[in-house]
Amino acid sequence: MLTTLARAFRVPDLRRKLLFTLAVIVLFRFGQVLPAPGVNVAAVRQCLGGARTGLVDMLQLFSGGAMLKLSVFALGVMPYITASIMIQMLAVVVPRLEALKKEGQRGQAKITQYTRCLTVGLAVLHATTVVSLARAGRIFPTCDRQLLYGQGLPAVTVIVITLVAGACLVMRLGELITERGIGSGMSILIFAQVVAVFPSYLSGVFTRSPFALAAMLAAGVFLVAAVVFVEQAQRRVPVHYARRTAGRKAHGGTSTYLPLKVNQAGVVPVILASSLLVLPQLAAELTGGSGPVAAWIQRYLVSGDHPVHMTVYVLLIMAFTYFYVSITFDPAEVADAMRRYGGFVPGIRPGRPTAEYLRYVLSRLTAPGAAYLGALSLIPIIAFVILRDPATQQNFPFGGTILLIMVGVGLDTVKRIEAQAGEHAYGGLLREPSGLREPSGFKGSSGLRGSSART
Image (cartoon, rainbow, N blue to C red; front, side, top):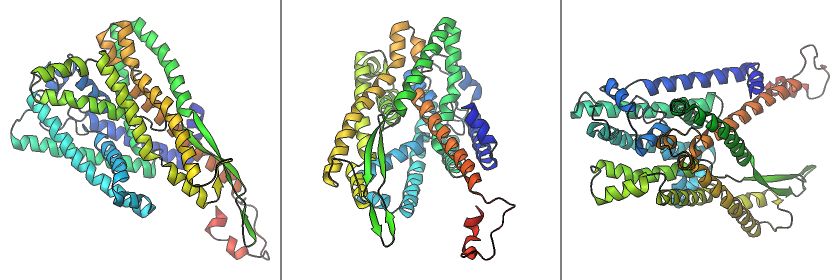
């Protein structure tokens, strides 16, 4: 990792991209600690130091602590991520979106516009919900301090507009990282959000027991190695391309493979399952938290160590894994693309038999991938059962979501840096030496003196 970064900083273009990405991350973190107008900062800090519930921990994780502080970037990347997932799901059932996906760059630009509009709508909904919870004192149920200075409609409207504008700016920052920086912009910002709360988790465990922190760090090294191993695991389906002749040129005749990852869905099923489990608790909080329904939710769905909660959580993750893989990877479309370019799987006929074979292989890969995500998400609960410390489950720094985001985004970013550094290294070998000139009588010299010959 350090060697890759050292090589990257020696390349001027790559160094500019890395510095630009770091500058955007610094700006993003500054917006996450900058309080929105009308927020009682002292009251928020006092409530943050008290006891926390499952809903508060979820907001702490997915916003990097910004939502609990009611900062300008309190919503973070969640509105955009939610909008992107919804657009991907709608593309399966809406013919217009499915047609846009097949139109190439023009269709993708249109889908991006739809995603932006949906992000603004979701940001308004999220901001209104957060401000309503803060106004009613439901973000910190154990704290009775007034989080907002003004309770009237004008003051609340200003805070909502500020949060929505912050979400739109975060969306633009992610796009800028994708265009001018390194890696996927939203993934980098999610990584920054998750890593931001990592030191506080470690310090919380260290305050209670230094021995528990040492044991967690030792277990964390093993877990990170296991996650890297599974994230890199893939089934390589061999693909051969028949040799074709067009005029005097021959095409094809090569062999390659189609990589199918064990964890094809990534961290999306865990995020969807966690968000879905939070909804009943959020509804109970909004209705006052009293009554038989709220008591049942508090007993079975909020308590993480309860068997009902664990079972529902794992089943939701496995169901979302199968669902997300089915909408993001279409075996029929892949088989049709292979057939158009003369590709085939050895021993399998092109077309429908190839699609059925890919669907069979993908289903066998998704089963262990879903089980892996479910087992990884139960790690904080298992740690709580072993140590019998309620704070461990809340402050466990190597939870499934944290590990998946850190390892997944880290591996992807390092691969992109290595790829661009490799392109620069090979590009230097292809450059024409400055001391050599092309003979004036060489045929076709005028065609080689363009911009392509100088690179």
